[in-house]
Length: 562
Image (cartoon, rainbow, N blue to C red; front, side, top):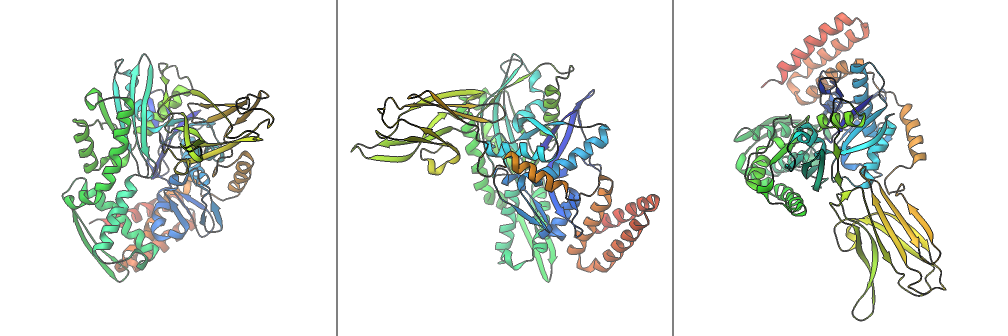
């Protein structure tokens, strides 16, 4: 069985292509959305999802979120006695999703199609594949999130020549792609985005404004208190999408927080973020050589796209109301289900060819001589330009700088800046030269090949001796090599993970503990409820446990209600 997975910054989903079409699987709590949060309890067990999200407030030092933004780096997060890389944290989320799918399907799952931001780099895509391997599944196919959204909206059934723009604003990343449907092919003309822009940034903006108005510094609060305040900011952000203002009234320790913000001020504060969104939109349209009136539809997906100020910006920019009839939280996941069906060659699906583009310009470092004959280094020489349709292969020939060079050092970069110091280094390849040959005889032809899964192959041919050199960029900085993956997999296997059938109880206890942190006046009552529920769990009486689950859930709902 092949499943489709939306591995998101704030939430993740899993599904497959079934007889009735796209099918999403609910987690143990009955929700399709599983928070992309990992926590470690006092016994060293891993907790994933809703319970871990509540523990971000009650146990911030043992919990972590938004680690998708660190994919492709070697950053490690310490949780209790364990240190985790971003791939491992993502693998723990994937394991939880796979457990939900196996429960629903009652069969084994061996492969997955995982969505990634269109603007993910080579290193980030490799890290995503590594996360799948660490979770115990094969990931041969990655699908860009805007392309997945196009499948969810059924663009493959639109008339030939139809053009669409997909605007994808998630919790931590922003993508935009321009696509065209033609003769059974969904062709991506251009992609742009920002891997560090999403709903979380609007949340940070509100938090900073509140603390600034009250002349308070973040370091004056404990991590638990900041977690409580951040949760209230999330509620305020959602309120501002439907109402003219939002109010926060809370006690954090001995501090009373009373703060109000209206829609006008929120829009002024968010103007820099909105401006950052406009730049990728304009670049994608410019690269696709299209005007707004040449688009047939504009589609908005991603949970953060619900914000009214974002919708207004898109509507003004394109002169129309965007489509949003597919649940923005589920659109990408539904698209990955279709992609999984296509990968499995499901006979219920017409054959669709998905083309994509290289999101970044790829090239190498070169030296240039100035007007006085002096040598200046550090220039970026593009070989594959951004938004080239993939798979793509391009080559250029370079000469050594000086007579008598023994080797040519090829530094591989991605980026859009003319100087390599402002771009991202992907790897390097050293080519041996014959110092007895002339500069012309020592030329090297460099070929870049970029495939649909975001893998870059670099080949170099030395003209002097016809020797070939190859680089698959498997040693990117921040990316695990095969041996490291095996070692990390063994370490993850040794970590105890709470079984799926305990998730509902864990989530209920974590929620009660979070409310204990937040509600000083109800602490004694909450402590009693927690003690009673823990006592019932010890009996292992399923009937009594279900009854107390219902009673405790109702009590917590009453406590949280306005």
